[in-house]
Each structure stands twice: as C-alpha cells, then as structure tokens.
Length: 608
Picture 1 (cartoon, rainbow, N blue to C red):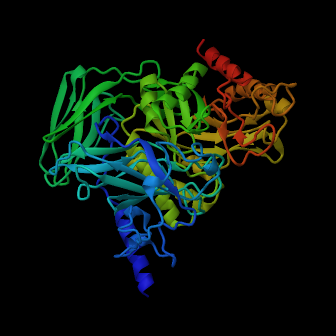
Picture 2 (picture 1 turned 120 degrees about the horizontal axis):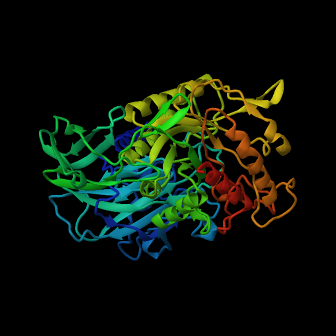
Picture 3 (picture 1 turned 135 degrees about the vertical axis):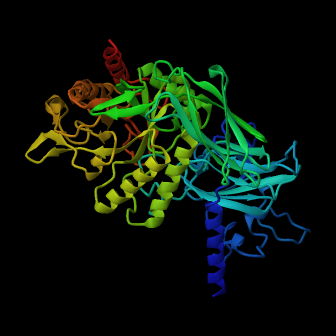
C-alpha cells in the first residue's frame, strides 16, 4: 500500500507540473542567458538514476538515495558510495541529437541524462527566472539544483518552467532526464517513417523577467476586416489586473493603449488606415512593441488574410497557387536533426531555388527558426501535428497528448504571417473513433485561431471498377477547409506509363492540395527511365505526374515528397536506401537529382 501511495503521489505531482500555465510565449526575441554548448551526459539504459531497485521513482520519495541522478551527488568521504559522476562523464553539444554525435548511440532509444552548470551574472532576487527549452525528444524531466521543476512530453514543441525559488547567482546546475522510447499510446506512436532523434534538440535559455511580465500576446489582421488589427495581451503576476498595456508600431505611427481585466488580459482592436500586407511576393514585416509597466517585448510581425472561396485559396483577397515542397527537419549533410538558423537557411534556400512559395513542414512542428525565416522570405507554411499513421484513437490520454502538442505549436507560431495551414494528421486509417478524434482537434484549433485554414493529409485510391479513376472517400474531408491528399500512383502501385490516364473524381467545392507524390532515387545512379531507384525513373514520374495533376479543376497547390533525402530505419534496401528515404530531390550530400530541375521548370512555367 505504501508503494501505491508513493506512486499516486508522484503521478499527481507530475500532473500539476505538466499543466502549469505560467508559460513565457513568444520568447524568440527576448534577451536571455543561453545554456547552449557542451553538456555532460550519462547513458542510463536501465533507468538506474530514475528508479530504485524496486522500480520506484527516486523523485517520488521524500528521502531519495544518492542513486538519484538528479541530485548530482558527490561522495561525502572516501567510504561514501555514489555510483555516478556527471563531471567525469563525456560531453555532447546542446542543441543536438545524441544519435548523430556519438556513434555508439546511433540506434539508441532510451534514457539519457544531461547536466549543465550555470551562473546568473545579473541575478536579482526581486526578479523571476524561467528555463525554456525549444524542444526535447520525447519526455523531459527537468531538475534544477536537485529539485524537480516538471515533466514535458512531446518531441517538437517548446516548454518552460519557473525556477525563481531555486536559483542563485552562482553554482547552479540543471539536470534533464530525456527518454525517447517510442510507445503505442504516445504522439507520434510506435510506427513512423523518420529517425527518432533523441536529446535536447533545440535551444535552452534562461529568461529573467519582472514579477509581473508579458506572458503572451497575439496580433493579427482580422479575419474579415482588413482594416483592423485584433488580438490580446496577457500579463502574468500578482499585479496583472487593471494594468495599462500598449501596442506600438513606429512605422505606422501607431501607439494604442489598453487596460487588462481581472485575469490580466487585454483584448486588442486597432483600426488602421494604410497597411502593406504581407505576401509571398512582398513579405513585409513591421517592428512591433508590446509594452507593460514592467516589461517590453519586441517582435517582427506581418499582417495578411488567408481564406478560401469555393475551390480557390485567397491571400489578401487574391487567388494564389501554392508551389510547394515537403521538408523534414534534418540537416542532411550533417546527418542529424536540424536545429540552427543556418540549417533553416539551407533548407528554405533550396526551396526558394526550386521556385517554391510554399512549404509543408512534415510530419511534426519544426524549429521556430523555420517559420521566422519563412516570414522573411515570403514562404507560406503548412504546419503539422504529429498524429501520424496509427494512433490510439479511443485512448483519451493519447488525445490529450495530441491536443497539447497542437496547442503548443499554435501558441508559438500564432503571430507568424507565413503560417497559413494547421494540419491535424497524416495518412490516418479511417474509423469513427479517428473521425471524432480529428474533428475534436479541428474544433479546438478553430477556437484557438480562426485566422488560418485547417487541413489534413488524407489518402486517395482507385475505384474498384476503374483503377485509373481516383477518389477520396473520407468522412473527414467535410471537416477541413482545404482538401489535401497523398498519392503515389506509379511508385506504390500503378504503372508509371499510365499516369497520364488517371483522373480524380472529386465533387467537393474546396481547394485541393496534393500533399505528397514522388518516387525514390539514389543520387548518382543512372539507368533507363523504367529502372526503379534511378534518377531517370524519378524524373519520369515527375514529368508524367505534374501535368496530370494540373488537370484537376480544384487544384490550388502541390507539395511533392520531398526536398531532401532523410534518415529512416524503415528503409533498409542496400545499396539504394541504406537507412535513407530516397524520395528527396536532393541527396544527403547536397547534390540535386534530375527531378529537382523538372519541378523547378514546372514552377517557372506557371509564372509565365
């Protein structure tokens, strides 16, 4: 009974920590103390540092032993037994994944502990201190100075914890237990088609804020009225009520003042006379300051409207065709998780060279660098929740994990003009439970953000009596703003020479985006155009597919699969795959395949 009570107490503690709402949003341009760099690490395959030998969590006990890694214990004398030492352990770079940094950890899935010592040179006991993580894959247990701050699940979304009560000016340490084991009830689940990079994969930063600070804000062009900016400012702290807050946009000679309500929130409505709207051809960003009596946050925000009208997608009231490409968050030449602005410049630079005005960030939220840079480059963005293939649709806890990650990415990127589509899922098998799951996600999304479009990557198939007649028979198609589906005729079934004969029978008056098509090719392998894995075969599929897709009356965009080859343990064929998904238009060495130039010409011809 004692063990059960300890476990229940531990679980309740974690629930409270996970659901903490004291979060610093839109931190990207805040000044902070970076904890990036070398961190000590310990590989803990048996989770010895987290559980005792009775499989009870150390941090669920009032008197944990020295075996609890988060204590960073040192022997008190020469007879004291402590069976770990972070300071004698090796180091690796943060941000970064462990798979690509240490050869012995290439295939490792499990627990690894990180430790970093830090000082706060400007420490002020009257301030509040938060530790912020851009992302940790998948579960992160965070401890500062031997005390637990909280738990976060989700490998691609940001989180932070307040640590004001624990830190001091010098000799602090943070320890993070990272567990990237896949599980059936998680999001994503066991089965994916990308590498499960483990580790602290994005920036770690300490933020110093006032006792009452700007926790969050939203400022967007109104969905209906293009002469109105709307949103909110949210304060956090004991003095959050009845505070004067303001929005300042110097270029518009605009300063507007508002007063927060009892919950510290001020609704924003700002009429405007003249505004340069953000677009793919003119990605105008305004310097915006959000000001409170004790805090100021600066941002660069573009203002635009995105909507649909019948089968058209409208950007600022004008029809736009989305010339896109899918992207995985991977630095192919380094062979690891992409994490820096330099990585983003490589990937989005290739997309611009291809002639794209649109990118699909698959199959999970990418680094904030990607959408920030997309804002500057004029690239429209599809962002995707990692509800991928098979999910436990009937499991309420799995739904909560999916919804939480969706809320976190909407919260992070709600002020990014480039983001125009929230995608709920990719290639999910149909059932009533799945329909309810995804419909609830869409409903939540519309409640949080009604200024963007909702989609999901569905699937098509050939009719039984005519395989060349393709249909999308999915109840969820009625719930989305943009009908999107993946199709691989000529690669997964179907004769490549018959692509020109296929047609889609879709009677919905909605815009259509072909969210995936493509074929694998090993860069540098040349053969005749009907030899699978050759650059010529991939190129032929593009040559046949592109004009066929162009005949779909409702077609509003395409995002072929995929910009660059990426690692995947599912892809085992030697010598062609060797652990890489080869559907990229660019190889893992950065070399362009023949199909890259075919797609580039197709996009160029669309502009003529």
